[in-house]
Image 1 (tube, rainbow, N blue to C red):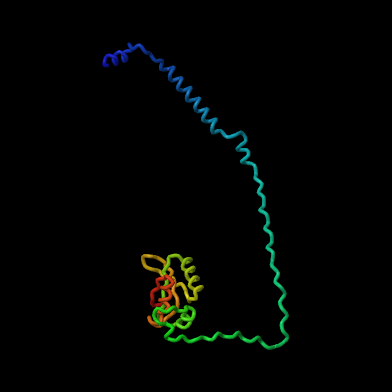
Image 2: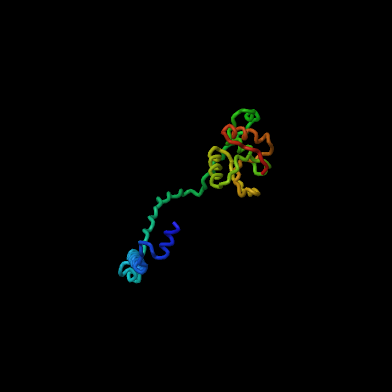
Length: 195
């Protein structure tokens, strides 16, 4: 191997290269490649002239005026000067203690009307939810079932804003017990809390 290297180094090798010719071929290849690259990305003639032309902007179509619904004509008023009688008030039935025995179903509408009161210190919390919309849906469902439900928003340190769904107002645990039993029978997990 050593001897082959010496022979090549001294110019005695059987293969000779024309270095000038190789450099000319490389320059020609580079020039061809550059012209091909330029042709590939060259813009069409007139492209920039088209960009300089003003563009016509069409006005958006005018919206149609909304159709106003016409109300039916008002009924003629009676000629008498007497005001209409006030609507009749429903008569409340007092619940007896026997109706609230342990294990008996509770009619929530009557129970909440009788047991609810704004100045009582306790209330029942049905759930505590992160999303206000979900809390509102829960309140609507409870109201549809006859409960006096509402949402209280609270900031819990380290956890952020929570929306607590609560219902009713009660003086003590015994007063809230029938409603809690009814809620548990409906599959909810109520707790008695201070307002």
